[in-house]
Length: 226
Image (cartoon, rainbow, N blue to C red; front, side):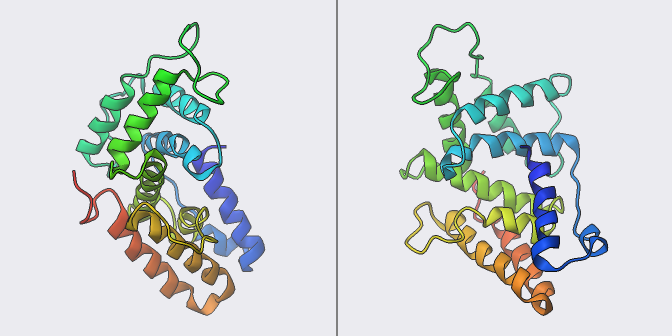
């Protein structure tokens, strides 16, 4: 399932669980340019393993889709993505050489992804999410957090919708969250998203709070080094 479709299903769930009318839900709907959705989708798929929601084969499908959709516009920086970040991502996936017909060994547990291409994905996340000595899983979670924060901050996902996905995976975690503030914030966002559903009168305040967090944790936030 692709990222825009997931956001659409979240919107539908907010109608069911949050008591919204379809007219109200229309006010929460956002869209992004295809180039931006394609870029964010690549990172979304690359990080699925970090939340135990998939394996590295998702990275293979993400790169394949990204290359297919950008082969005529590979130099086009997606809207609001910092050019330095875009160049970094492109330089990392340039080492991905495809799997079909390869006699290289497969990655552990993978049906199609070679170990070499898994290493490409790992380097991508360690560069984009930051290598702080806490492993590629933590780097993947930071990458996802930055990506979702940026979608909200840039206006491509409503705080109630984007926040639901941003906070979904760590919302019920109670212990320490390794990975630093960009990972820890996801638990706070999960709490805010639940409050959004349960306290309709507080929704404007909650949306502003989620948006404030998104500004601080997006690609261009003050604590992101580029």
